[in-house]
Length: 218
Image 1 (cartoon, rainbow, N blue to C red):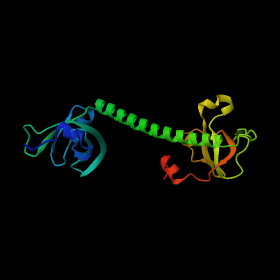
Image 2: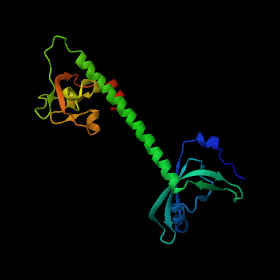
Image 3: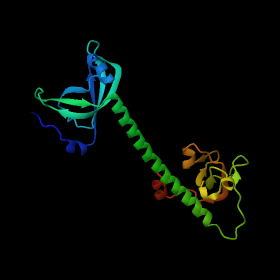
Image 4: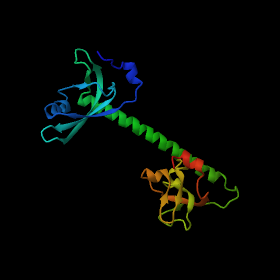
């Protein structure tokens, strides 16, 4: 019997996707979940947690039919098999969909956390710019973008809602760059929230390389 990876070893291995041909007489049963296993030549280092990308192959025409599905390997054994072959237990379609949803949710949560961190840093920089203004300065009013846009290109303190209406404690202010036509380089814009107000307070022309790295910019 050939050696098979243990569950512990599988957990330590980065999951792989194995692309394999699948004959039409088997494909439909696998796709529906009626055939929850595959017997394959054990020449790819299959591990629990890996995925099989099964593509239906027409032996007569010698081409793919276009149908394909992915199934996660949930079990492996070579008991009572021909030498060099392995049985691969496959996740059911329902379990596969549940696993896919959980993976997508985890990825979305990570992306949201990264965006939230970048947005917090932008808000802190805008807040610092406001705090650095002279105490005896003349009051600076928020300017609705519907009234007018900046005359000069540059970085400004901006808001995605009227701070006077919803309260400053909500921290809706960011910094963004006016390129002469559009507001760019601001997380709220990337998230589909347009700039609604701005202050006639310019910030440094461009962020430092370290700032851009921290905010996920190249």
